[in-house]
Image 1 (cartoon, rainbow, N blue to C red):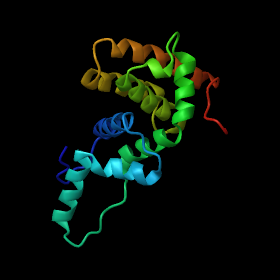
Image 2: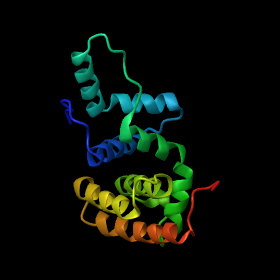
Image 3: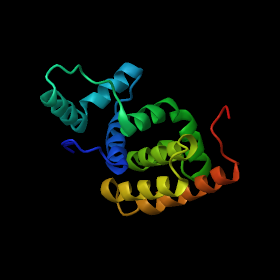
Image 4: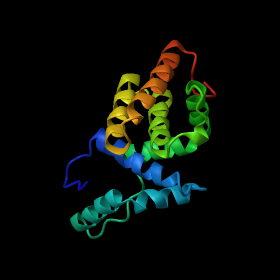
Length: 165
């Protein structure tokens, strides 16, 4: 995803967040430093940083930023809460039994629904379903849609809110 001076779209940022978080499902980050390293190691981020360096040879390495980083960091910090929410709306499915692709997409969408006021629930759902078409299998969409529909209704009714609010 070469940036070439254009601001990345939210969809491409979500895809990057998915890729980093999916990778972390195999080797979890145990510290924020490890999380930053996983983000920086992503090929898309490395490409962006290389382009930034070409544009300004004197530029220092940039700190993680942008929507992808916000989602990655937010999901990482609230993962237990997100998993609890997903588990509460996934009938007969424990989080531990879910596929990593589906669970990662669910975490991202539930994070957006609970913690991002700038993302409507329908957008979070649609984006998760679109990403499932790219990264999941044929069964992913229905599974993700069913859980996210229930989560969205609970958020809209006030039955599900972020802890501490």
